[in-house]
Length: 392
Ligand code: ATP
Ligand code: MG
Image 1 (cartoon, rainbow, N blue to C red):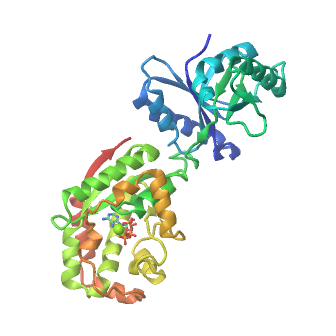
Image 2 (cartoon, helix red, strand yellow):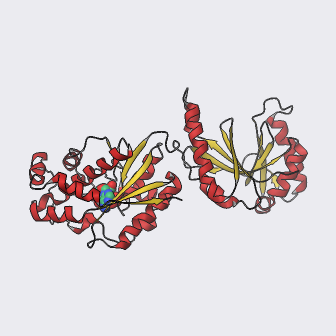
Image 3 (cartoon, helix red, strand yellow):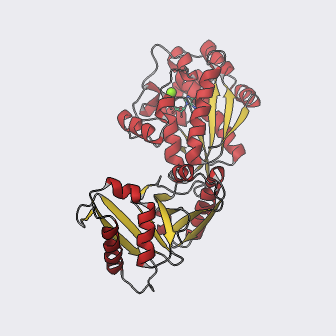
């Protein structure tokens, strides 16, 4: 009697939580359940630091569920496992039936057992030996090698059943989305801000995304690219709202009224202010940007001070100490790289000054901005805001 393939999701940092562990676990379980919904009908339960994802009908897409499980923050390992009765014969039978392909590719194997059910009569070494012996008979071409096997067969003796699986793959790590509160992330179409959003969601923040557009200087394709990035991120971050904010008039006013050297900084201050207003409405308690110290003129220490001066919410810049190469590696790992490098213009690049101020004095930036009616311009931009919902 072999059971249906089941996903075993191992909890990460959540297990280190003390009294509020339940809060983290509940949130993680509901994040997993929601994420599984698009892959079929599943039963999800949490027992002893493992989430079990069991298909409830025959038409569940297990490959999709497995891929999705690897993107849920709070999970450190994911295994595709096969449940069976808790006796060595049944365990070996299940391994034979389900792991035949893995044995066909291996020259050597070993069995490793975890005995989570402490009342089980055999200890883990006895189980490994017995099951290993039976598998060695079943696959005479594959020898036993306990030191450096090609294939390790894992056996987990748990309360409700035994589970057999090949090595688990790493999960997305971090903390469950939503356990750290909500923040607003400023998403451009570049490489950096998607990575910054991902990093902060991984620390448990639920995100609202803000994107500024400057039609006709920026194209509908540029906006679509950002929505693609947002959809991609939602596989990790869950459903999100992308706030699309028209920015053309603000940029034109800046160009008409401010000294060219301060174009970018004044513009960045508007972005921060508008994002803060959106954060207040969404009850978000922080802003997130993809800035990295020294990367461009508007990301020197003085420039960052001038930008941050416009808002009072904390501004999280997870990339601040990272090199471009590290950011690119992360973008590749989370899968945003290919979209980010598509060549569409961003509103930042539309009115780039020829000689931006590199060490701007805050007072000078404020003075430059004083030529504008800040309240009227922010109000007008927010009145043109549109919402797009994205989900995995
Ligand atoms: P990115 O790769 O994220 O575009 P960047 O290094 O190109 O970053 P800038 O273009 O100067 O840097 O922008 C700095 C940050 O400001 C971005 O990381 C992003 O958080 C935010 N930002 C820039 N342009 C926009 C935009 N059009 N809409 C929303 N946020 C933006
Ligand atoms: Mg950019």
